[in-house]
Image (cartoon, rainbow, N blue to C red; front, side):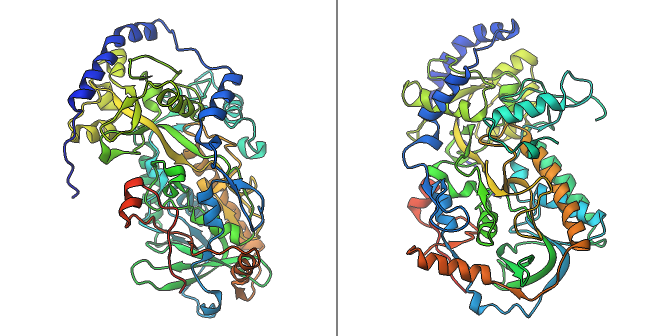
Length: 542
């Protein structure tokens, strides 16, 4: 068990908390009267984003120099990843020796991958689910606040949900991916929503969804679903027809390669927060290193919307052991204010995440009203005690047990003391291009979840990621099973796409020692570990 050292607020911060307390009575009264801090106009939102959001700072993007998106500008960390060499030398791999064979190979053991496995099995397919770490070690587990759905019994509808999704994505979303209940569910507002449609399980919604999916998949171990843990994919395998026909896996424990032949493959490898773009902290799980982007791109699948990155406005900044930890948007939906060093509100708590983050950064930089932390960073207050005042004593402990318990271990009572927060790298807005049927441009290769792009446009709203993995994970499983049954073509396996990619690197004059997929972040270098940077990881070609 990892030892946690108490780190209560030092005296300097306790003195600053008194300023928060001094404005709290007035803020509570305004909340009770229904008075909200004014929302920004659309023009003001755009101005804040372009001036303060990390996507727009100098050096935030550079052009990809090879591949199907040559000339498309994305973050340098992702561009470096896409321009890296394969972890394998195609000339040294013998594909005639098959270690596993199946109908459907699913790469990724999070919510999207597990949902795909369940539905594919229900449609008669044999499934292998291969995951980098343990089954369920995924960003799905990190999702806290809730899942969006327009439920019966409310004044909501899919129409309003659709408009919110499009608006939150700056109307750049691919519409066909964003369109297409019985009972009344508990719900809250989320940032950028015009109706209360956030359904939740305390502050562990993702964990509850992942637990349910994982348990069901494990129950089907004898009925067509095999789970392989600690075996990340390092390269897709195509056949002579150009169809995806499996993948090379790498056993992290034995350091052996495994060849899996399949009639169809579903990429559900998740996001890329552990690239620590621009040096930001991240909420993401340890294995979120953008593997699926590399695998799909090298095989010829285009990417989209990777020019934007989602920074969740409320990532923990204190104590230092918890830096980057997600502080769910549900706190703001339940009534907590965000405040500067003077205890003043400076932004409506329900602005879309990119706008909210830009406003936090503005307050801490240009306005100069950030709260100084012991480690020399700036932050803003998230005044969670307001929730107990508005909704009754014990609400914070009951509705946010995960965060209440965690901060208690550091001797901070978030029902009585505010939290220090700052934007943290949270979500990969873009990803591989795919259709409403989860098909990519490579026959037999499907994508679902955070590895895919287009649903959320240039910014995702809270609660839509869990909806995304549930809906598109199921679609991917169904369509992959149908493809395996009706369209799959047998043929000689090859790694020609990886060989061609290496040749293109050479012909483009790109000299690199980087190898991708990264698989795991490298925190071995003290300076790297200190800054949480992992964009330059050198592996080995075997």
